Length: 273
Image 1 (cartoon, rainbow, N blue to C red):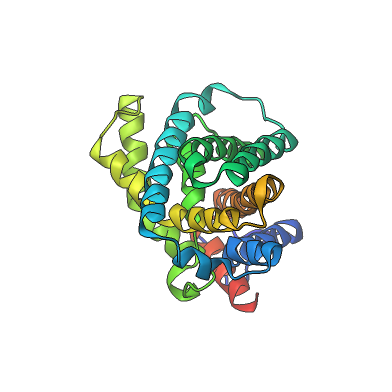
Image 2 (cartoon, rainbow, N blue to C red):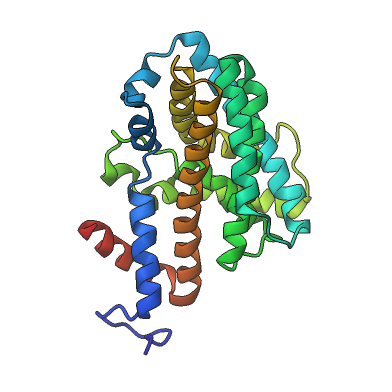
């Protein structure tokens, strides 16, 4: 039996299925390195290549990342809540692979066009996962949690887990997510330049930009080309799908068992993972 509200127990009483779901979420959220996937794919240390990109490329990535997230935020608020039907994950993968093929064929010059398209496709896939875990995307906080996934998936392989673990990152993002959700709930729109939304985008972009740099670094390799660019984007999508499944599994379990209990059990599992 699950512990009744208001009671305390030293025994975490999740059902076996929920415990298995939380264990899978812990693995996805605590080991979400896209760099490892891409390094295995191209046979080169992607993080080191990303660090070596020239300054103009880094500036282009930063600009494209912020623009992509601004567009994703508008989609999250304006269209998600009016679309109760789940999309096709296979379609999302095909579309994001096609946009990656363009990026692989034409390089950094296409990033300002390709990245917003890929990001919005990924957002739609993340939204489908959120719905499958019981999220009501008419709630601005739930919709913004879909955008938040781009930050949660932004850990590099060299990050200190004690400082950038899932709950640590959620804690850092909590204020900007809450304030942005409150603003959208009150206004019902995404206003250009609203400080609270600018802060939210900046917080997400600072993490999302890490993995965008890794993606660009992989696509920039001479051996990649169009076919490899599609494969890189496919890995990019799968990376964020895995993070989204973990994130929204945790949120679902929090609604059932309470945040404190789930964080405690999550931490226990993470220490053993």
